[in-house]
Length: 331
Length: 240
Image (cartoon, rainbow over all chains, first blue to last red; front, top):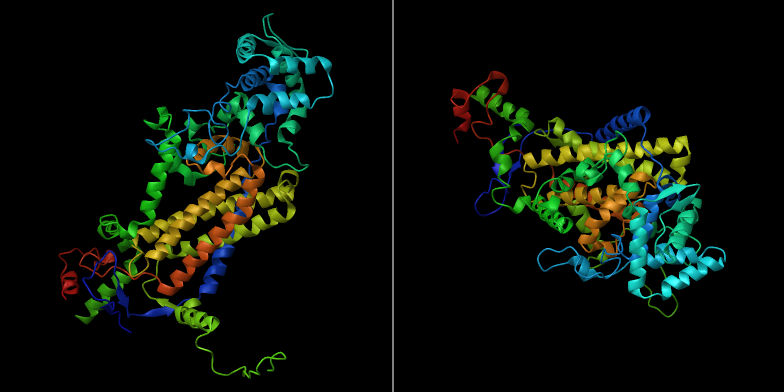
């Protein structure tokens, strides 16, 4: 059977980057089931070999307990910012709260502002006051909480500011936070008790528990931990920081999500390194690039690249060689 | 066949002529027309399909099959099993490495198809479903990293939330909610990937493998002979 190419049965001008010549040439035996079975066995052997040799990483998760045990002062400083409403979570905006003027946007469009608050978090209540209220009856603590919650906002602010400043030079000895004396109001007792609670593991449960027995939502404890420095320091040691190509890396020396390289790449270069809207801008870029990739067949110029760079000659070299040889023989 | 009491009797023979207007009959005719057995499960292919690059499509599917199988074992045993069991850790390793190979093979497959301009000849939908399969697979893998229940998933969740929230999707796709991410990972996103891959494969079977570009003088150079565009053989082949 000779390899002849004829124009497909369509009208109009032939477009080499969109049309093909129908194949009327030679066909060869092809066992699709056998090919898939062989491919499956090859990949299975590869997977088994890689699993035996390299296994997979599993670094234990950080808990509020391990955080408060290994870095109690960092925990206490973070807890004060949560109580004062000054932490990154407390001032995040949607979807966690309605802080004004902080949502990311592209021009006038802020999608997170548009979607609104869907996971409401009041860090003072959720991270500090409500967990403390779960502790067994302690008149002194109860009085401290009442004193704090009934105080004027300005007074609360002066207490948390003073205690937050004092914690910069705090020490943690014999299971107790020690700071120089100051006008901290009830805040020192509340944060000290919360630190003790965290070190016991009770705060982990208090942050996850809701009105039902089962819980799978770790939004509150993860945001709380992300506000501190402990988690970030551990991530930096595992080369997982955003400036270290972040999410595409994996703990240890394992390959991570290398397919996210282009997304992660933008975070490494200006202007995104200094942009307060970097996430929104980079997502917009990636959406556009993904759409362009999907629409390559419709893009003049781009769809011509394969024909112009001629890498197809390597892929179909046997086909072109057979045509050349056959033509040579004919002549 | 006798209908229920009070209804007219309708006799239908099992091998009688089909009811052309029936939805089922229309669907069957359309399916058989689009996918005759020889096209759906072929035993012949055009002679130009002769390159290692074609293997990567099958390798991608094979890796996906192992991803699904290993993930199914993990699902049967539950999300904490692999942290506590050596067998579980091994199955998790298989899941991880099959995912890595899946993306490796898929990216090579994608670039191979790009350089073949595989969208030609009414194959645009095949290209688009392939790209969508890649994109949704990235989301599926991402939700898997969030579902690991270890330090890696904690860190990825706290970092990824900003990007997801910036798109507004954080309102209904909360990367800090383990339960929600696990559901996306083991049901919604695999179902989406599976559906896209099935449509992609059916389109490949429907349209066939894209034929080569029409030859021009450069294409007809025999690499082994080192012929050039000035070669008399080439000149003869270029002549219409």
